[in-house]
Length: 83
Image (cartoon, rainbow, N blue to C red):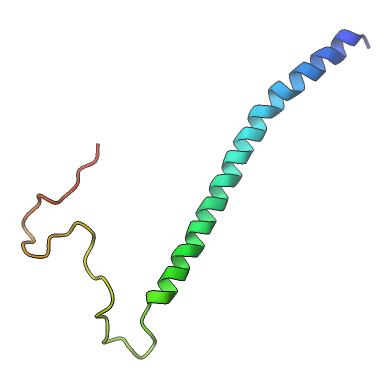
């Protein structure tokens, strides 16, 4: 084989592998972030969940959704619309 073939390989391999490695890195990073967020969410739920015999005592739990108007349920001024 001639030297031009090896030069072409040396130039082409990083051009092909860099985008593939970058996409792989983004996928693995996204999975790591999602799993980490899930673990944090589960740990938070375990700390605020009532005990087995305390089904009647829910005074410490938030029962309304964020942005919900507690004084007038027909008022829609606090509803956020996203485009």
